[in-house]
Length: 172
Image (cartoon, rainbow, N blue to C red; front, side, top):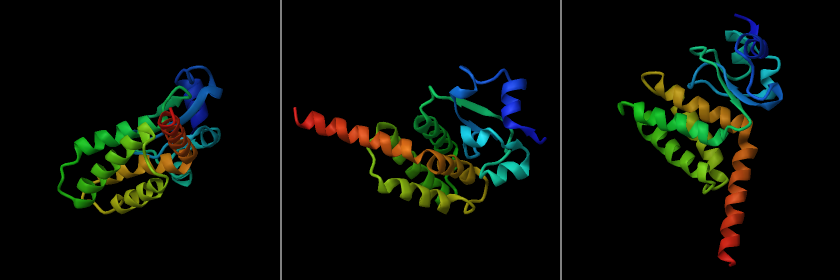
């Protein structure tokens, strides 16, 4: 406990492929915790209080390290697809909300989404969080929240590139 995340990765886990400068993000507590961008990973400690302060969590402490070759939007979309599959369907927020997040995240992977859907995705994740019988709803909501909190510009850029390519194809 209280080991700096950077030290844990660099000294005890073999480091980031391509070196620390190639780090994109880390999910510090398994798939159900919000990711942290490199800037936060530089100084955060691996303990409950420090990770909560960084708007993430220790969770299962299954550290997932993603370098710059990672498609961060696709990575989070795959987690949401997993949680959709794992939902038992008993709770409406989880059953409907995670299914909706899965569909929207698939559009974000393609870039075929609307800017307003980022805020809608955030709101839906907040409606799921804390409103289900078990913690699966929270586990599905938090990765999306981390993505939006730290990588919104990447989501917007993907939409811009998609719309640019679509406009270019239409003009041919």
